Length: 368
Figure 1 (cartoon, rainbow, N blue to C red):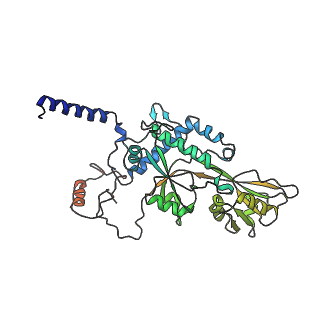
Figure 2: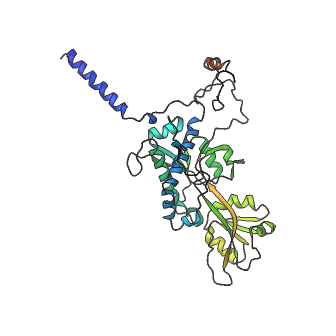
Figure 3: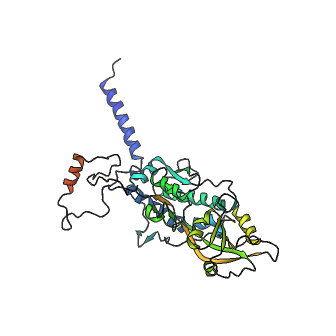
């Protein structure tokens, strides 16, 4: 049976109207665009997460989450490296980058973010103390990120979903390698800003956000110990220190002359505390100012170290080209373009003769 011209026109118009109406209900910011330079989406993701963290603090929800955890909350401090001033004289201090590109656009469009984490469920000792508060902070930060792009927060089914990627066994070197390889988009709250990984400073091999929280450190010693200050411990070349997984790098870097006994795979709280009590160890490095209580005269006391470790969210840096024969003539920012050909010549010619006097090149725009 033939379809009349009038019927065909009606069908075509209806389909076109459907497409247009669907397009109109997709936020412009969620459509994204191609990166203007390599890593632009990662830079945007840092700024978007900073905007989310600042809003979380400004709203008071940050304190609500921390104060609701009776175990971890008292051990946490807010390192104020991103003040929660959201606007000033109608100028937005923490804008959400728009339009999103690269990895940020992928997260917004898919409504999924891959988060690398250490599975500490059931782990003994100090390693799992922050499990609950970490999960609540991460969920709140991602919800604020979504709201910046018109996406509803959890528990709405349309919220950005957190897909956990387990790094096992727990290793900072493995974590940063996998982060930069693109195995996940961001980190969980698991890596202190000041430490190293892969024999490099962490902050030189990956991007990072505002510090989400910090933890002060303390030395637990016997009540009759000669140690009175942090400097007393540093000055003792024969000091024997017991540490857990979360304090292993800090102890190695700050107490280079001490003997470090690491309880990474066991209950550091009970084993290290009992070892200090029994004279096996001189001190236990822990983030809780309150030591395990024992009957006198074997009770313990705490020495503040006046050190605070800060934890940001980590975002991938760029894969290192060190030691490789780099194609310096490959001007494309397309990660799939691995050759030098006519397209690179065209890119070079399109920018040829640009100078500081006429249409200067911004420093952020670069090829591979």
